[in-house]
Length: 468
Image: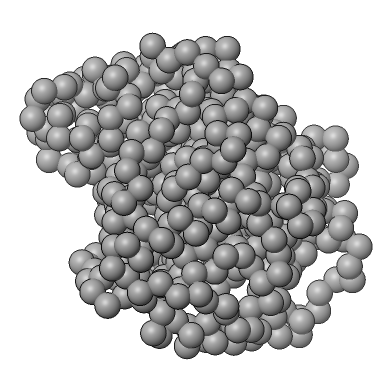
């Protein structure tokens, strides 16, 4: 099945002439036609344009790093001539005047854009649902969420509707859907991949990032090499060259959970299994408990939820009925608190910087951390309290292992490594120091090889369809 091949193998087949770009495109469009009615992973599919682009690719020089291979992007990245609705009635309906930085880089590398994938309203939730394109379902179990806010992208890739693409991550929005759907996702260091052309344009500097998603670490690395690079339009973009990583002597610190926040049994077992696998590969693996990060999730919430809350209230004033619950579920709680003063913002920035310095000091001799992506596996739609075996936790607590590294600006990689008792995928998270994405990708590839092949979703399970 062409649509199930690794992206890197698709590149080789097109380059050698063994498979045409049009054949690849048609295989993915057929899979979309079969699976998307059940998943609702796409905000739009560009079938006619894609076939025309594939024919041009087959006639042209095959020089790009991903020449002739179809990819997808989350519907928060501008594509010239198309609107970026982000699932919201409050986003502009006008077509974007030019490609976002990530789409432009994909096109320069020869990729063909299959379509744009679904998000929550304004990309503000861990559950992908909105009034415009509706709810995205998890390809492993349609009664569960694919995560958010890159939930459409994760579902499309896991189901074979796309070989890879680009999401964005402000609080786990790449890593959590990757973990929920059994794929790989990279949250780079802020500034490594340009955010120009990302919507909403007021994405929080230093917290929001763009990054690649695919079914293997090798494919994520290939996409990362296409996407990474300096962009003088992006105020935090940095001219960091691609490099090779040496893993000899690397020590890995294992965090079973975020301080006293419990995790579900499958999450704990999978992290322990990954730690054993890394130890079996010869790495020094030790327990790690960070110092001074207890308030990190609260600070992330201050910057990502509390500060924007009043602006969100003003944005929807008079049109509240058009704001989807995924946009407003945290609004009332944030508005219950008094408005933040300028001094409180300055103090919070200083506290964040102090936390970052303290963690990096601890990581001088332990440059990589292994921990859960989230405390939970993919949950039933709209569920917000979760059993862990010791006590129930809420969604904010469940995501503390993800949001901490958005606040601190560290790169993180989600790799699928196990299955829960219900047959749901469980990922693990590798975290490194700033600008060390290549180290994460090399280590992730070793971990993936030790794991062996990972299953695809059972398309007959609660989906009403079996893949041909």
